[in-house]
Amino acid sequence: MAPRIPSRLKLTQQEFDQITQKITPRPPLARNAVIAFLSGGLICLIGQLLQNLYASFGYSTQEASSATVSTVIFIGSLLTGLGVFDQIARFAGAGTAVPVTGFANSLTSAALEFKKEGLVTGLSSKMFTLAGSVIVLGVVTAFVAGIIKSLFL
Amino acid sequence: MSQRVGTQSVLLDPPPYLSATATVGGPMEGQGPLAGDMDRIYNRLLAGEKSFEAAELKMLEECCLLALGKGNLNVDEIDYFIAGDLLNQTISSGFSALKLSIPYLGVYGACSTLNLALSLGALLVAGGVAQHVMAATSSHNSSAERQYRYPTEYGFKRPPHAQWTVTGAGAGIISREGGGPKITAITTGKVVDLGVKDPLALGAAMAPAAASTLISHFQELERDPSYYDLILTGDLGQVGRQVYQEIMVREGYSLPRYHDCGTMIYNLERQPVDAGGSGCACIAVVALGHIYQRIRRGEFNRVLLVATGALHSPTTCLQGNSIPVIAHALALEN
View 1 (tube, rainbow over the protein chains, first blue to last red):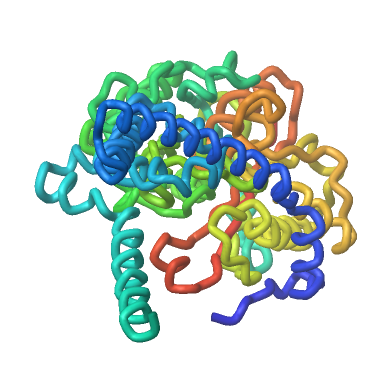
View 2: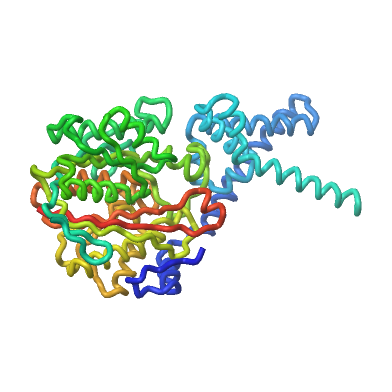
């Protein structure tokens, strides 16, 4: 759709773009990246400690890592339900979004939101509104990676 | 008799009175600098209801009843109830009209709804077909967030130009006779679009609409900024407000007595609202509460309300359309 400038304004499209670009504050990218690195790293550190803990109970590495992922998903969902995850994420940004905590949050927040629309029509069908893309793209990527591996490696 | 001036403006004669108003706010608004001017503050976002939609409805209903009480009027005395909100099918307004049982005209102007409803009400009263009209609007941070963006508990990093949807409602009663400021003129906006596609950058997107309507208002009614004690835009926020002022300066108008409701309703330094407030309730709560009371005390005598609205939906944005915007102006004079 072509932009429409009101006839009473002398303003041109180019001038408007310049003004908005000049005034709109830029997100502090370097600061956000450092915070995301540190907070994401902290989550991974907690994950590693959990994995070591499970391994010390005598589980194999694979079993321990499955248990770790489940625990971190549980914590992410619990914090979402308690209403604090979004506040942490507002600070941490990609730090909480990239690890499995972000996946847990996207599922739980959608489930909570649509619970009032019924168990089947609401919660179950709309739970994956955000996380659905992760699953679809994850499967597609795995498929492509699998083909590359079987053909070339 | 009212007179049409130019292509967008009407001088109302006899000018109807904005005889009574009421406003309610949510928890964040209750912590803001204008809390003292609200008639009721809800400390919980759910306001004792089971969903955010029900909470918004409760706030709007309560606000309308408060306005009726303050105007000493019964529902039977109101000829029309004109209301709108942000939710799909304007459910808050339609459902509240069920309870009020007043002939209902539902309108949608996004965040410009207050002025849209007040303008239509003023036209009906000045046209002699109504004695009293109630205009009302509401928005709720969580119901809007869920409809326009993400589930409320979803965590993401907000860009610094994002705005915070105001939780609350405002209602005003327009009367043929009575006290209070008169609605003397309205300028109805034209939809404009300068190609902004980011639904989080609404302040900047709406600034040209506010500029276009304000300039039409000045040119058609042969007024200039010095005519008004205060020119008040609805919810341009910190970024949109600066874009707006810059556009106005380039068009040859300086606005010495100018404010934006989005930057007034919250304490921008202490509250985590980024660029300020937005939503239908933003201008409704500020203009019908704080500003209305100051007009009644005589601190302002001529105020121009310029309510701005973005007419997109999540679907149009996802399909790649830019955001069409509008602004309506309405003059209040003692």
